[in-house]
Structures are given as structure tokens and as C-alpha cells.
Length: 220
Ligand code: IYR
Image (cartoon, rainbow, N blue to C red; front, top):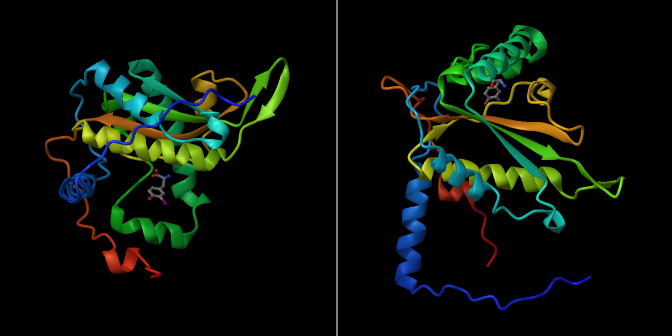
């Protein structure tokens, strides 16, 4: 059955406002960096809730919203997750990743050690819901990877906008997360994000982003 449709009122901006707002937003996002060294400074719970709500505004295939955001602040759980993640990472860095892959990671200085999982006040583990069960019947969701990728992008932007830092951590394989967090069988771990403040002595690599000419191809 068709949804009830309601009028859509677009917020009108002047050209000047469009120019300023688009530039300011770009500058804001351009300041975002993946940070690997965290402080244990606490973050208000309501800020985390607002961030999660922002992630949940993402578009999704047939509006199925195929995501669950698990927010972990419990120390024992964080320790358990860190241990399990490092076990997988040790195997990955110790041989599962190709030599080329390890060469590509070398300039970033990443290793199998993931202390940020325990130090950051919050860990968000994003799960994708591959199907729902309606009246006992399995129903697949649509464009799950696209939908959840967009939601994570919005979540990361919201984290940055709130003056916090994060890192997209992808221990591989990630199925230990579903087990530790006792998620239902229709959910698969997608991304692990520590959230908090950067350590005082945190450093990031001096990276350059692609220029507009490298990013954009125009067809007039
Ligand atoms: N998942 C590992 C390895 C890793 C892979 C890529 I591609 C990175 O950009 C960074 C790390 C880890 O989280 O360390």
C-alpha cells in the first residue's frame, strides 16, 4: 500500500548563503582526521545519542533502515573486544594480508595492537541487518552495503561535527563482534568506531587529499 504523502517544504537559501554554507561545510569535513591515539576523557551520553540519530537519518533501500548501532562503554566488554580484535589482527598482520597490502599500510604506521578499543570512552559497532523476519518469514533487505555505507559516512561526519574523533577500524574477520555482543543471526558486523577525544600527544600522518581536478570530471 502507498504511504501517506505529505507536502515537502524545501528550505530556500540565497545564492550567497549556499556559497558560504557549502564552503564552511567542506572546510569542516576537511578538518576531519582518522585518529589512532585516544584520551579516556568522558563524552556526554546525549552527544552519542545525537550522533547515532544523525547516522540513522541516512537513506536506505526501500526505507528498510538495515542497521543497528551498538554503543559500548562497559570496560569489561571493551577489553573482551580489544582482545578478540587483536587476535584477528595479529593473524592478519602476521600473514593473512598480502605483502603489497602491508607495504601500503607501512606509511600509516598501523600495527595489530588496538589500545584505542579500551581507552576510548565509547565504541560504536555498526551492524548491517541482511534480512528481517516478518510473520516468521525471512525477508531480505535491499542495497544493504550501500545503505549502511552512507549511514556510516553520516555517522562519522556527525562525530566530527560534535568535536570528537574516530577511526574506522575493520578487524577481519569481524564475526567475533556479533558473538561478544550477542547480536541476532540476521546481523553482521560492518564497522567498529572508537569515539572520544584525541590524546594530547596524538599525531596524524601529513596526508594530502585529491584536488578538485582529480576528484571531479565535468560533462557540460
Ligand atoms: N584492518 C587492519 C588493517 C588496516 C587496513 C587498512 I586498508 C587500513 O587503511 C588501515 C588498517 C587494521 O585496522 O589495522
